[in-house]
Amino acid sequence: MASVAVERPSRFAVAGRPLLQRVGLMLAVAVGLWAFWEAFKWVGEETGLKLGQFTVNDRTLPHVHDIVGQLFEPSRRNGPLLIEVLWDAALFTAKEAAVGFLLGASIGFLIAVVLVHSRLLQRGFLPYIVASQTVPILAIAPMVVIWLGGRGLPDWLSVSVISAYLTFFPVTINTLRGLDSADPRALELMRSYAASRLRILWKVRIPASLPFVFTALKVSATASVVGAIIGELPASIQSGLGGAILNFNQYYASSPPSLWATNLIAALLGITFFLIILLAEKLVVRRAPEHVA
Amino acid sequence: MTVVSLQKVDKTFGKGGVTALQGIDLEIGEREFVSLIGPSGCGKSTLLRIVGDLIQPTSGDVVVNGKSARQAREDRDYGIVFQDAVLFDWRTVAKNIALPLEMLGWDRNRRSERVREMLRLVELDGFESHHPWQLSGGMQQRVSIARALSFSPPLLLMDEPFGALDEMTRERLNLELLRIWEALGSTIVFVTHSIAEAVFLSTRVVVMSPRPGRITDVVEIDLPQPRSAETREHPRFFELVADVRHKLRGSDELLGEAELIVAEEGL
Image (cartoon, rainbow over all chains, first blue to last red; front, top):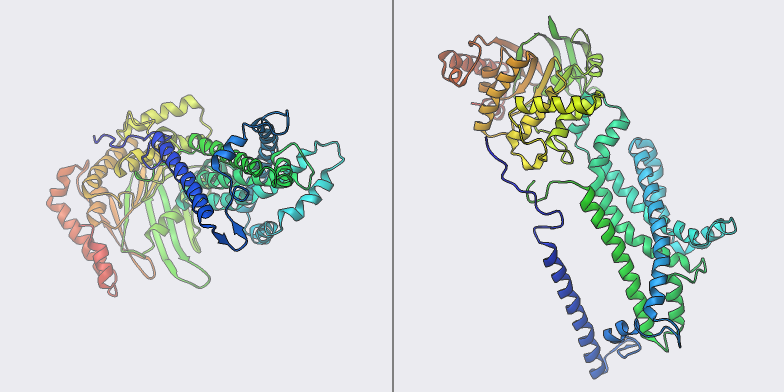
């Protein structure tokens, strides 16, 4: 009997590249971007480059090493290091974003599960779900803060709700597509077993939807961080990254690298969220590697 | 005893649209191996799905295992195999085979015992924890057959199950299917457009023609049982193949060139 020719590649290898090689590539690109930044800055300063009102100097475009170095300077006279302040702020925002993400992703998933079972509901509600995302988050945020404020709930919860508002949409749209992506013959097969809708959902539709769901979760994970940062502003929450951005924005004239450093940390938080979902996907989704299929 | 009985079955798709099947009368007895053969568009797959209650006929009576097709489906009286294996990528071979057993509420021990038996039956012992994508097309189709037979349904419906496989794999699986059929004593309804395959496997070949889909001939296959690789070299085999081919050609004078090629490409 013919034996199996295909070995399953390592789960953490993508497109045949081992993890180490990918990290190496990522670092190389980072070095490239850093070199480009500094080269642009140097040329700009030497030639007095003017792009409209924009001129290159230490105020508009600080050195990368100044930005990173700023993290290890005291945030204020005799205060803790900037990185300690930002670390605490990032943890706070991470909590808001994580709760928002879980809330939004669950609601988004449930909406899709309901809509996939009724064309009528889908036609009726989908336009409004799309419309919900055209409303600027900054217009929604103050209302959420007012609705949820003064009810004994923690302040940051309204930030989570704002973050959930950004999170649920990609999850609903992609889950809907994913649940519908089940092989029609697989559905016939389940029908031949006289399987109930719930069984079909559980055994066929949901597993078939997972690759789509995870694509959405990756988008939503970063969106939830953005949502949390923006949500902190109207909620007047000082302890998170949104508060820090607002604060360092005010002191930009005296210390430009502080705001840049804060943005750096915010980006890292978003990337961390993304990577957590990526890891979860590797653990959950069992699919034929593309080059084998 | 009659396992499948069709009387005056018509099927029209859409309102006043295409007539897929017209006036189908067919009786299939216990332990028969009946092939439905005909060019594309003759409604043979539609007919198979009507027997399985996956589509409802527009009119006519369908009785399966002495009850309505719907009741038979709900009682899990048949297993079905498609042209593609339709295995679930996220399940191992063993779990794919156990899928219908989960539906029937069998407990874990009973399931794994039956899965072991089925793996032995289709000669895939040792592959239980592989995933479908790690198997060849022929092996995948064997898993799909094992899944269809796992709950011992009296009837097996097969919709061009070997149509996507290469000729050698196909011939080997034909022999395996006959072995399984003899071992289990089930009734098989088999859709194909290969004349040789239909003659080799069947006790009866039902010849169909398109537009509207109808039965034009039924050929009794009197080749000796059990069949083996040598059966394909038996003079009677060639006679029957020629006979079926004649009836396919004669079945519709209006059959276009292209469809003739489709009908004949099996041999």
